[in-house]
Image 1 (cartoon, rainbow, N blue to C red):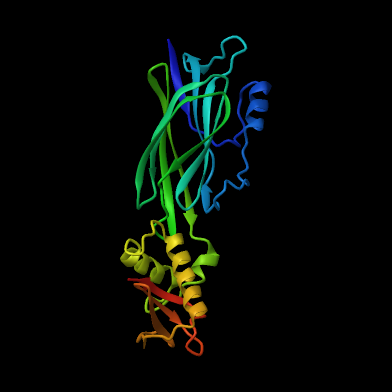
Image 2: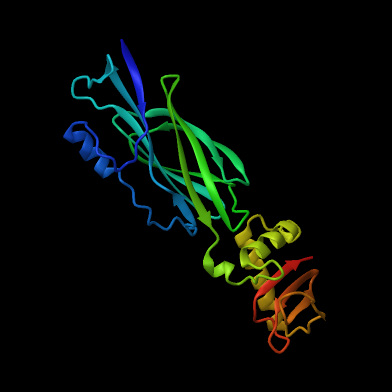
Length: 255
């Protein structure tokens, strides 16, 4: 009886298929170095694969000169999306679907009629909500009306260090903890959806304060010295000051 064995392997594993299969796989190794129009903040730890192999009595059996079909998945993460690179074997697949779980957000996705070779798909609205997120993607391949395999891909993404360095530790002892707290508390009220945009908006507000030569409203008590509060146009900013000018670490931003 012919059965289907699903083999989950890394894209760099050495296989036992014919040389032509090895050649195909070598062409499909993807090194994520492209600029997708948004900074890449993380990626999958390694490739994951769903492979469909026809066998007879537990032994691999390649029918004629055809190759077993397989789907290879790589992905990268920006601050608001997951970008998939999928590579297929010798036949198209009706559907690739699954769930992205960042620990803060879960979002389902599906790609229909995935063709042979390299394909790129973007899942938007998966925003970075903490300074670092571990990402787990559970995915499935479906063809001929039947799901023929599943796999799990893990990875991570982080806020760029250049943005994190703009934020001070405040009373939390670390930049990441302080930033996370203030974004969680004030992000919605300043109309930003991810933690990167929160820092950018606070920094733009700081630049405006300096440009207008605004006078601080008050000294802010806390573990960090020389923190002053500025108010302008309905917003406030707490930042470390030198000679009453907010040129140091950002501490808080809100309304």
